[in-house]
Image 1 (cartoon, rainbow, N blue to C red):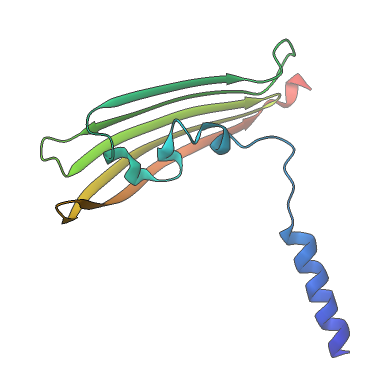
Image 2 (cartoon, rainbow, N blue to C red):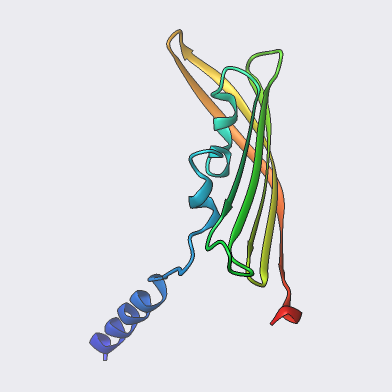
Length: 135
């Protein structure tokens, strides 16, 4: 009985832990240009203010094809240790639409003259909607 129970637990673990995605997640499509999605501490690593924008459209010519728009910005403070940033992106695929907005804060902690440690905090929200009328 104990052996059967262990096999059942392992089977369920493999069944539910393996997940497959058919579409590329918006995070993966934008990570090179908008690092703040993964790490809010990245906001302070540039030596000045920056604005990045991206637009990606897949399967052009097909109605409702996946589209991603993103804008990120970062502004260093006059104190030179605290940095501010914002990130907005909109991911639309057929009947689904996901919009996210985040505000990022980054603090530079000098460890020695050649090395800094950046600490980051991100706060924001998202809106997910499905338009079932377009089915």
